[in-house]
Length: 150
Image 1 (spheres, one colour):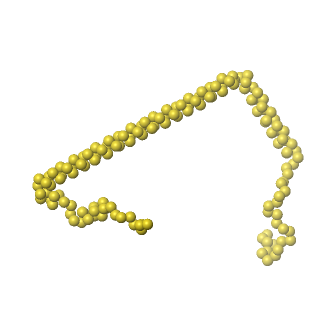
Image 2 (cartoon, one colour; image 1 turned 120 degrees about the vertical axis):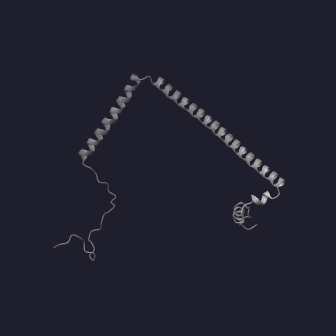
């Protein structure tokens, strides 16, 4: 039985042409038909384009397109301005919310300090347990940077 696979020990006499630089040409009839089809399509499109001025007022179309573009740009500008106003309002609201929370924290701190002054034993009763206080202090404490000084 004859195998169709090449023998790995045997060299081929003809060099393999994997990448040839010659372009394979089609039949002359096929090329001529493609050229005629391309030419006919080009002429058809040109004839359709030549019919447009009689059916459309080109200056009116052009002015409508330009006015639509200008109107769209102005709407984009108005939209951006309203977006910026909304962002400013939201940031102002967040600032007011932060100020209200800071005021409440200051009020609670002031009342607590007044109570600690009025009742000296109150600070020990409301104090955190030692383990929790150490944990909170390890998170809150500001440490020196790890990088060496220059």
